[in-house]
Amino acid sequence: MSDLTRQQLCAALAISESTVRRLEADGLPFTPVGSRSKRYNLEECKSWLKANQCQSGKTPTGVSTSGSWPGAKEFTESFRKVRLRAMPSA
Image 1 (cartoon, one colour):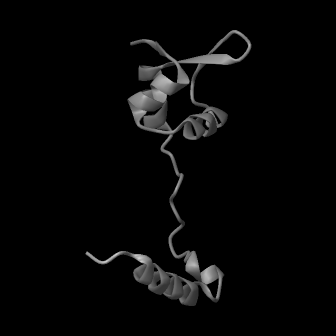
Image 2: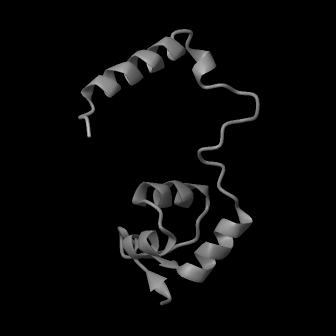
Image 3: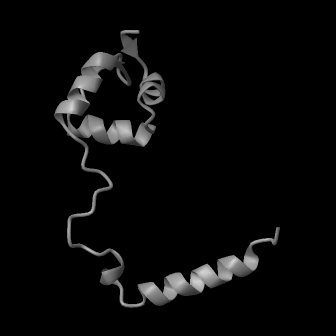
């Protein structure tokens, strides 16, 4: 398993195609094939990922996402109540 398509790379690494595109923009190694296709060496990609730890999804320490909107807590509580009413009983 040397050169993989994007879909094969996604399956091998358990990531989405949009994540692969984002990682390409950050420097993930690939080999262009023709005008639109790309191939990926799994071992090179794994090495690159280890050397370039992904920061996606990490919120900086001390930052509260709900603190940016004053009504966030009330909205969340009202959503939970509506969801509880809509859930079927067992």
